[in-house]
Length: 126
Image: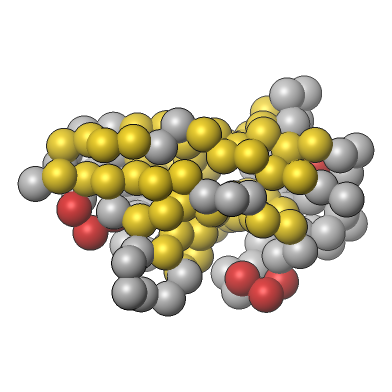
């Protein structure tokens, strides 16, 4: 079992930066593909970024490519999402998710992730 707890959300002006973190419990973190998703009010959840076991492989949604950076620290069981050049359309609840240990592919479908955090609100004002 893996438990995920996000932190670091908040209110930021357009053009600003924010880093959200996700602390994971459980012994399989270092062999778990991790992902960030977001859900804006009235919209479906969407994939934002994913990262492989070692952190050397990453995937981004086109909407955030070049602005967001996903990273992980396996010694701290933590995954991060650094968000730069934020836009009002980035406003959403951001969720951390983990695939089951042993799966090595970074996937964009939410149903492929077995564990989810409670989410953290990111609001970008114009």
